[in-house]
Amino acid sequence: MNLDSKKIYIIAEIGINHNGDLNIAKKLIKSASECGADAVKFQKRTIDIVYSKEILDQPRESPWGKTQAEQKYGLEFELEQYNEIDKYCKDLQIDWFASAWDINSLKFLEQFDLKFNKVASAMITDLSLLESIALMQKHTFISTGMSSKSDIDNAVEIFKKNKCSFELMHCISTYPMKSEDANLNTIDALRELYKCNVGYSGHENGIAISTAAAAFGISSLERHITLDRTMYGSDQAASLEINGFRQLVGAVRKVELALGKNIVGVVLEEEKPIAKKLRAHIKN
Picture (cartoon, rainbow, N blue to C red):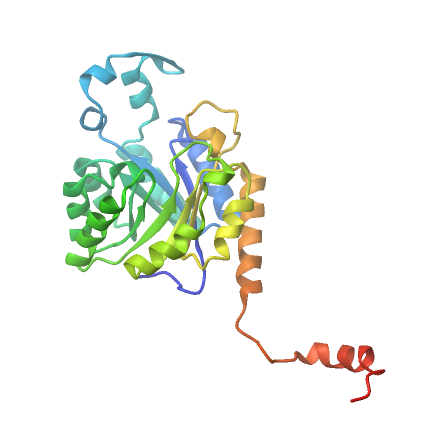
């Protein structure tokens, strides 16, 4: 595992917020890097495997046409685009990886020799996909949105059986998530139950809840990033624009610094002259 356990690994989830436009993807990668993110993440699907013909034939108005198929294919990057992304991220010295939604997509991503894998919440019940990911022996982030305890149990068992490094990511799969649904205490519960590192993947508006998650000792933090929350796309409204993402990174790093260590009974050197002044009238 190549993560610094004392530092929260911050992931800017680009996902499909690039809207099939490589220039938008590059702007988001550059912005994420400038904001201080450790990595950017995409999503990879083999469209005719992930979606049935019945679904793909359904009507859907989008910038790419009038069917679900045209919309899905319009959003999907292929080898040419990912070659550019790989080179661009290396130039900027920022990690990138992607959540594969099927085994063909996982094999596609193998050619880039990425450090990490990601199991999206939607895919945590695909046990054959999880087996294939675990066999790769790469540190894997596993999101737990929409998951029962047995779903999480099965995923953890697969990764432990294959001796593949992993961490869970507490996640609520609503877009955007309501504040009262965050249930951040689940972070501690997951850590206790599964004896592993736990991160947080957030879909809420703003940065307050993600900043609070940092105080729970999370190992990783993932938030969607976008150029403009009003752009076309199902994830845009639950994303952070560039300034918001920059503020989040700054707030999280400040929380890490503020958590410090246990200093019960320790008087800081800076406190001593203040104590002497303010307690001068006390005669013991």
